[in-house]
Length: 462
Image (tube, rainbow, N blue to C red):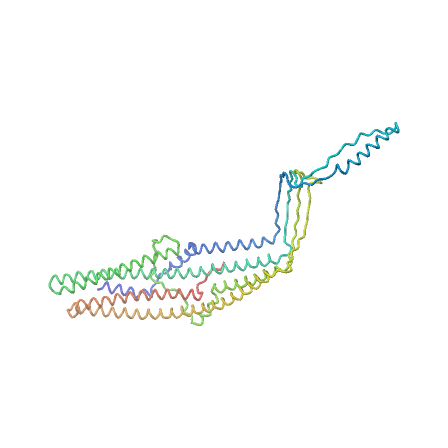
């Protein structure tokens, strides 16, 4: 009996006692470092940072080397009538030279002009090379400028998403931790209760053996032992499941031990309902949608930029010919200013309309989200208030059940109460203790929900 009273008093005093150190703080830090889903979101954020740098790089010059060596056979050819054009002239010159030599001895001697064949040339050279060092740079390109801004806004969207998940992870870790403590205390309660009912069974069996009670009281004591054993098995399963889930959030071995604290109270300010509703302005979900709207508005500008001129420059220096050499006949330089201006494109107009509609859709989503978050804060606030009242009721119930059990136990020893009344009083006391454990940790779980709904936990912004 003394052991029962001590256990109950310890359970009642837990609410006001506490350790100087709170292991939950270090567990949250561990989750920030090791949680796998958080790590995946962090990698997505890092990827977006690379996209921002890529968008900035698109505004810088690009240098490249392009080389080509070609070998060709066959293909189209062109006939050049060189012989048909020159041979008649050569024939006349030969005749003139012969007549001049016959008329005058002083006429100079010329060799006869030969017959020339027509020429056939292929369009493709048998061997040709071209090597160019090329520089390309945008002077003005509205699409690239808009894309850079879009990627900047997307970076903020990813940062808000990462911070929002960190806040959610804090809530999940706290809920899992308090759920584990609740399951562990419930398990300990039934362990203690089992030892008491087993002792009661031995006492009852001894009384029956000495013909002081009937056998039905022994059967009742045995049934109570079996009932507690079944409840103990359920409590053990709940404790193991809660332990595994908590370690899963921290990316630790699922059976790793968990440090417990006697006092699990949080320093959560007792804020008013009005303050809880107004605090949703700090939620990352709203910031995420706000940046998404700005990014989509920039998409509208991106689509409109299709009707703006784009100006760029290109400079080439290289060598070309049948072989590689640098001289006045082989190397070359070519500089260009390139203007691209779309004057008519109906598809681009339709894309502008679609992006404008997307902006309106996101604005409606933002208004709906604000209402949802406010509703979530209201529900969490009232749930937390109700959970605190449940604790007061549960504590009063435990105190009453303890006094009732003490009176029944005294009557039982005096022979004024039977074993069934004693067993029922013990059951009521155990159930009251279990409800107190549930109420205490439900309050902590609801406090974690309120903390999440009102953005009360300070989250580092990336």
